[in-house]
Amino acid sequence: MNQTPHNEQEEFQAGRRVTLVGAAVNLALVAFKFWAGVLGRSSALIADAVHSLSDLATDVVVLVGLKLGRAPADQKHQFGHGRLETLSAALVGLALLGTGVFLGYEAGVRIYQHAEKHPTWLAAVGALVSLLGKEALFRWTMAVGRRINSAAVQANAWHHRSDALSSVAVLIGVGAAIINPAWHILDAYAALVVSLLVCKAGLGIIRDAAKELTDQAPTPEVLDNIQRCALQVEGVKEVHDLKVRASGGRYQMELHVVVDGSLNVRQGHSIAKEVEGCLMGDLPLVERVIIHIDPADQ
Image 1: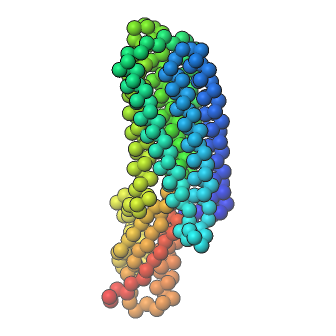
Image 2: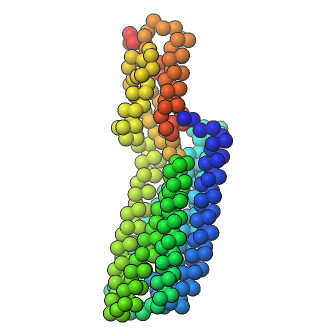
Image 3: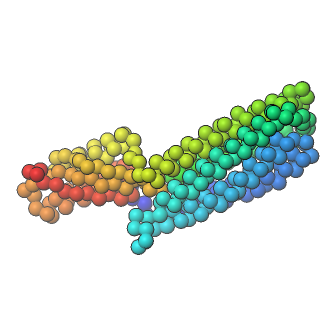
């Protein structure tokens, strides 16, 4: 159903709130993990603190994307500003990809140099606190992102999850080194695996954003639902030339519907409005519909 300004404002406030809370948690975790990493003699936890620091930058990107992307259409942006939100999601994906490459490089250097680190329980506690905090943020942020259908907020949720995965690697490595100092290198191997997972998440976000920015059509299931909705309107004989694109996670479309050629303009217009009402009311995330009426005799 078409979004009202009131709903748009509520969605923006929900996305803004979860992002601001995430930024506050990230700031606290950066300070805590740096402190625990230095005193706990864990270079992995210090690197994890750098990862949390990168989250702060993406929080800013998401806030800007939400603010600009949810702005109403104007003379210069007549189809709205939804693509700005998509662009902010792509930037978060790039940040994730960069973080994954950085973590992988650091892990590779440690494996190559076979550097020995003997962390303490303080580092393990720091990693555990980070894991629990970031996983909770991931679940809350993803739930809000799906509810308001924001690609940027959902991308930021995956950034929280990547930080949680990094903390898992740190916890495994630190725990193994505490149990048996000879296993210290497991920290680096665990970090290498996590870096690949982070890169995969970043590439997935970039891929989805690229699909929207290049006007890729939605899935066949979405297209079938659109045609089915239009064909159930009385007076519609056929649907063709259906074109659909996404902007800010919402669908904009145009389609031709074939009606009896003997109908007058007012009757044809009435059928078109019924089709529009069906699409806007029965299908989720439909923002704009343009309908062309074609006579059956042509």
